[in-house]
Image 1 (cartoon, rainbow, N blue to C red):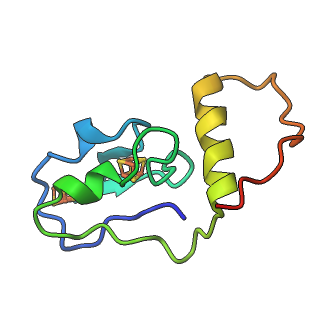
Image 2: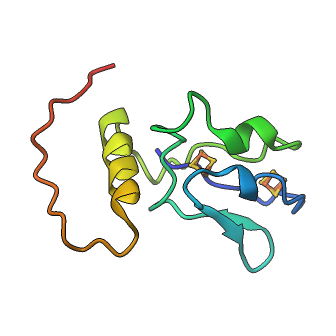
Image 3: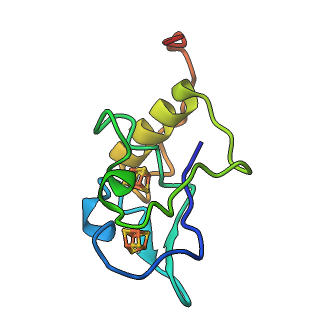
Length: 99
Ligand code: SF4
Ligand code: SF4
């Protein structure tokens, strides 16, 4: 699942630079997470970095954006391939890691 930022956010700015996927940005009123870029830090860290640093614990998982660990890893690999990379068709040939 991607994570999301609730209205408890106090705009303290500490999470944005911690995100390895540049998924966090300032929204209209509070910070927001782009679910298309959030991998729960899969591929980068063992724990979601934004959750680690948020002083008010306002970053739960997004129940509307359910993904398996394998899908998160695929998202990570897609992001690594490049933002505008429309080329690489991902033929999902790799077996699911199942862990
Ligand atoms: S969990 Fe990781 S990838 Fe997702 S928004 Fe937080 S820091 Fe970024
Ligand atoms: S760390 Fe938490 S409170 Fe601070 S900007 Fe990010 S989501 Fe908001």
